[in-house]
Length: 134
Image (tube, rainbow, N blue to C red; front, side, top):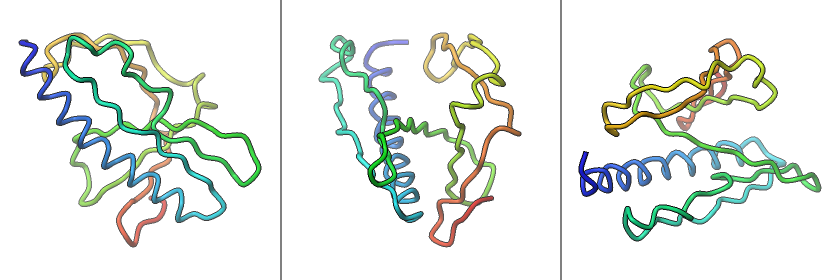
């Protein structure tokens, strides 16, 4: 896979995932009593400068007066319902995760290493305007 294609794919994916970050932030905010910090979007200038452009988390959330907790938001292009949803996977479920597993990603053109969480440890949220917990 050439660098130009990978850079285009990466920028498109980051742009789409940023929409998901804001949707999750709005959902958490609508639950009340939460402070939310959205981390700044820092895009690498080009693929050669990709080192040093990672982040600790997409969001940090805290109940008033409590410690900030990191929230990582992952966007996936999956069409399993007729709306926009989020899956909450708590760190406390880590003991049930499977992996790390390595797969060849046909879109990215290289191997990726992932953890997988069984669905019975995932909580789904509908982020549509009349949303709620699924």
